[in-house]
Amino acid sequence: MASKHKNRIFITVLTGLLCLSAVLLIASVCSVRVGLRLFVDGRQIGVVESAADVDAIRRRVITDISDAAYGENFGNCTVTYGFVEGSDAAKTLTEDEIYKALFIASLKNYRYAYGVYVNGSFIAANTEPSAIADAITSCRSAAQGGTDAEVELVGAFDIKELYYPTATLKTPGEISRSLLSLSDQLYRTVPHEQPGYVSVNIDAHVDENHLLSPEGGEIIATNKNEDGGMTVSIKVTESIPFTTEYRRNEDLFIGTYQKVQDGADGVKEVTYNIIYEDGIPVSREKVCEQTVLEPLPKVIDEGTKTKPSTSTKTNYEWPIKRSYTLTDTFGGRTVFGRYSFHYAIDIAVPGGTPIYASNGGVVTKAEWSGSFGYYVVILHDNGQETLYAHMRTEPIVSVGERVYQGQQIGEVGMTGYATGYHLHFEIHIDGERVDPLKYLP
Image (tube, rainbow, N blue to C red; front, side, top):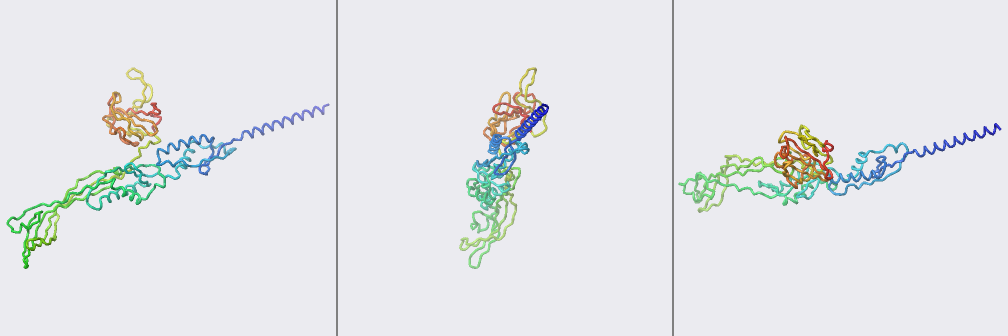
């Protein structure tokens, strides 16, 4: 009887151990973490939690690149997945790591470079801005034709810093040839005035005065030849045409020119021998010349500075670039005992301090209002807007003009409803005014 009881206890314990082992085995199997291994263009990047997250980040990458790249062939990288389990599945990539991998792969056939545009049309790109400057200089020199004639720009150059397809990258020589084919659209020749002649001290008592050429001069000697001919030596004053010198100026944008010095013709005295036969001049030769006054060259500075891109950047910049005091922030406030909500930040600086575009975009307003005084609104490529109010005078930009991040648009004042010199600065996202401090560095 006791033996049967012990057997039942043993069986019960054994059954319990078996059940416990089964439960532990099932639990261990169920606890194995399974993830997705991300491959971009066949290269393993790491583990991600879901394909949906990767797709969302990829769409964001393509949107961001579209503002910073020329063409539409980017984003053609191949994304595939594989399964991973165990401890490796727990080490997932961050959003920034996925973004960086997709960004680089999407631009594998692109290079960050400087593109030259003529009258709005893209010509070519090069990774060195000096190559663009050299090509433009060569084009201008060719239009000048190796003469003293001055040329002026009638077309429009534009240089943009973007990601360009590698197929559009050209050598300086190739860019020069492309621009030369368009030189008639870019430059026109300004003819130099022909040198003038000055008549001086004609000795009226000399009988041979009627033999002088129309430019006049001074007869300094006459000699009759044995054969009845005559040699007349005359001295005339002639002008020395000034030349035009072009200097490179790194403070001016490519395609822009600035006159530094006006040119002035010089003066020289030239002696000629004129041979006459039967009163008719048959030859004329220059005997000598002497410079009386050196010509003064005309000096023009030619820009070599790359034009900044007016496309919208990822981050905003402060519209004031000097020390400042925030006299008011975004949020509720009480002014003169009355509560109101302030939808901006007020940046106090001395009057006349430059105001700069916080981001690139298109000026949609540059006008006056009773409360803002002189103010500017810029629409950015991402649909967001920035507003700059209480400018001292009319804005220095106009409606429809594209401005780059950091370009001056006006000066700090206190026009409109303002109690002191400051910039009232707003950021609008999806039509709503938001706290600028959350978007400024």
